Amino acid sequence: MPYADELLGRDTVVDLAAILGSPGSMPCLRGAADRLDGLGFRQRVNAIRDAVLEDVPGDLAQLAGLVRVALRDPRFTGWMTFPITEAVAIRGGDRIEDSLALLAELTSRSTAETALRWFLDEHLERAVAVVMEWTTNPDEHVRRLASEGMRPRLPWAPQARRLIDDPRPIVPVLEALYRDESEYVRRSVANCLNDISRDHPELAVEVAQGWLARPDGNTASVVRHALRTLIKRSHAGALACIGVDASAAISVTGPAVRTPVVAMGEELAFDCRVTLGGAARARVAVDYVLHFASARGAEREKVFKLGVRDLEPGECWDIARRHRFAPISTRRCYNGEHGVSVQVNGVRTVRAGFLLDGAEH
Image 1 (tube, rainbow, N blue to C red):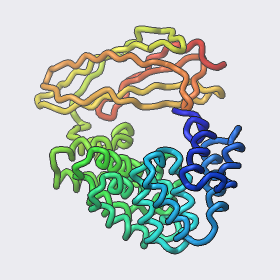
Image 2 (image 1 turned 120 degrees about the vertical axis):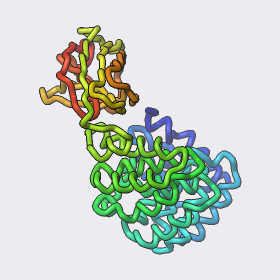
Image 3 (image 1 turned 180 degrees about the vertical axis):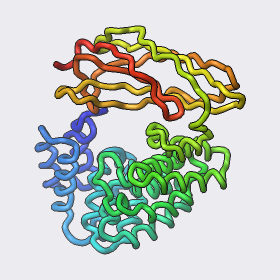
């Protein structure tokens, strides 16, 4: 993941000031470019956004005019547009439709889904009415803005509390887009339903079942991606949506750990065998679970996908997997005993242990 200064660094802000104004103009924005050191990404967004609003006083129309001139410049793209979308949201006030129209113009240069959340919190019904219009827009970026902006738990953005509590206003948007011609849009639709599933699993399964009743050639993969969290949690309804029968007679041998000591930067190697009993063909979904030691002794775990396969009675599926342990910003690893288990059609095996060395103490 890039660092904050790579996304919104001084050079980017200097370029933004040049795009938005003539030489010597935009003094607050130019000054903000020199005050970014030590700030995180969100702090940088806020500082740049607020500087633009100081440099461009007045109402939404004045800011919109400046933005639309900038949109003629091919350099106005990428992360520099992020604070501008939020400036539009703040300056827009109750001019909901005008503000959202401008966000739709901006979204093709990067994205505007975070700024949309300002309106979902304060003007949900009016905002959703505009978002529904976006679902038929010929621009795939605008259609994706409809689904991505409605995500209740959008990464890097404030949670949409009203939609977490009651996600039903999202459903018509997703219904309009789950068969979209663009994979870019369909993936966003799936991510949005996955967000819903974290708080309202039964609603998410009900929506997915409706899609499967009215499918196209991509619907099965959309549903698998949309229900991935519930599938990892062994939710019976979600498993049924991907054709998995939790009652199938399955036996598992393993996992057998082949690297009992793993150093940071190296790989855990393990394997297992899945065998289908009974007299009928069945679909088998296999995941593996890593059990992480923590600094305070409490264990954390994370589920990873291994695969889905249809097996005949008596057929064996031999699976070998390697998992690399490397430092990442979103998950800190510690020395000590860890574990791995296999989850087949929602049922976990016993855990096999291994030692991680060279991580934090």
